Image: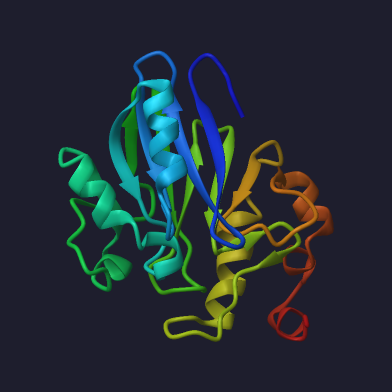
Length: 211
């Protein structure tokens, strides 16, 4: 997604992870979201676009999303690691900036707003980018949602998150997930509300019976 004020580069990392570079073309400021296990493509993209890295944002603490955080921090020591308090406590490095539900930061002209979305982990977060895009990490995939059977996961919390945090958001938002599990790499939230089985489920019993 590109525009005069904001652009998002979706980068495939490893087998099926997605990492993202959010950047402001005007001020040449950037944030890497979930660098994953190999940040080479993200770093090359920063160099190609001559971007200044302000933030390394982690949607949750699992290593397939954050393994390269320390390497990037060494290369860009003035960048700030951003995550939730709960998941930040599980990282091998200390976050520079802790966000909670409703927190906001600026990347150049771009406003990033954070949603607390527990379910996959206790401290999972999603990011709304300038009211245009929604980066969902392992909370929402295209056609599915994140698993809840790992440590810190909760089926009931995930259902509440989808019902109370995701469904009320505008249909026009483009969903950019943390994994390439769906039929397409991104989709409108409106279409996901109509077609994603985890968003269509009306109650916890129906949600819990989804294969």
